[in-house]
Image (cartoon, rainbow, N blue to C red; front, side):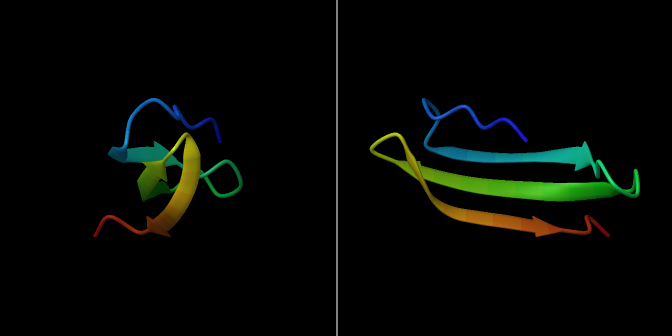
Amino acid sequence: MLIDLSINRQEYVEDCEVCCNPITIKVMVQDRQVVQLEAEKPY
């Protein structure tokens, strides 16, 4: 998974690389470092 460290808050849906089901990814970045990462089923 690639994360753009220039964007502080990100949320997007991506297909899982293992099972191909969609997952919602939520990322918080501070000082170009990931400080929080969540992955969950969108529904």
